[in-house]
Image (cartoon, rainbow, N blue to C red; front, side, top):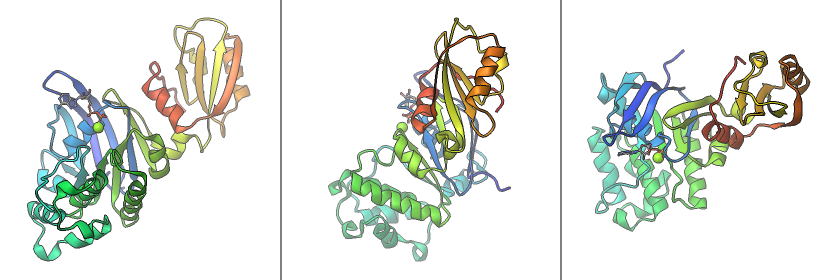
Length: 313
Ligand code: ADP
Ligand code: MG
C-alpha cells in the first residue's frame, strides 16, 4: 500500500494569543482521492492547510506530504503540493502571465517546462493573460490562484474554501477543472463549509470541529447510502450515561437526558433489534422516529451536539 498523499499525526497549533486552534489532528488522506475537509468557521481547516503550506508553524505533531516530512524534507514536501489559499493574496501589479512565470521561477521550473499559457487556458484566463491582476473579478482571481498552485505540477492540490466569492457559473467551471485534474491523477483536498459541494464532489470526508477530527469516512458511509439509519428514541427516565447494553450499534449519542440518537447499519441490524436491546437494558420507550442519515445530520450531530460516543460497529 502506498503512503497517503497527506498524513498528519498529533498536529497541534496554539496561536500566539493562546488560541488552541488544533488539538492533535490525526488524519490520512489517501492518494487519488477527492478529500473534503469540512467544519464550521473557526474549526481549524485553514490552520491545517496553512501548516502544510508552510505559512503557519505547527506547535506539535508531524505532517507528511507525499511521504515527505515537512520538517525533515521541506523542499520535497513543498514540491509535492499546490495550495490555493482562502485569502485572495497576490501582487496586484503583476499580470496573470507574470504571476505564473514568477511562481514557476520560485519552484525552479525550467523555462522549457513551464506551462503558463496552458494553465491560463485551463482556468479560462488566457484572454486576461496580460492585464493587471487587480482588474480581475473575485472568481477570476480564485482561478488564477488555482493555476498558480499548479505551476510545478504537484501530485496534490489543496483548495481552501475555493468557492467563497465565486459566482455559480464560474464555480461550475472550477469544479469541472478540478474533476479533470482528479481524473488525470491529482489528489484533491478541499475545505468547505458548504455541505452540498462536498457531497457531490468528495469521495472521502473528514469533519473537524474545535481543532479535532470528529469524523473521517467515505462520503457514501457518512451519507448513509451504504446502510446507516438513524433512530431517535425517547426513553422513560433520565440517563446519566449510555447503557452498556446498547453496544451493538454503530454510534449512540445522548442528545438530552432522555433522548438517544442511535445509528445502526440496516444491513446488519434493524429497528426491532435496537428496541429489543433497549428493553434488555431495562429502558421503557416513549417515542421512536427513524430516518436515513444525510451529511447535514452527520455534520450537525458531530459539530453541535454533546460529545459523541462510538461503540464498536
Ligand atoms: P477555519 O479555516 O476552519 O474557519 P481557522 O483555522 O482559520 O478555521 O481558525 C481556527 C481558530 O484559530 C479560530 O478560532 C481562529 O480565530 C483562530 N486563528 C486563526 N488564525 C489565527 C491567527 N493568526 N492568530 C490567532 N488566532 C487565529
Ligand atoms: Mg478557513
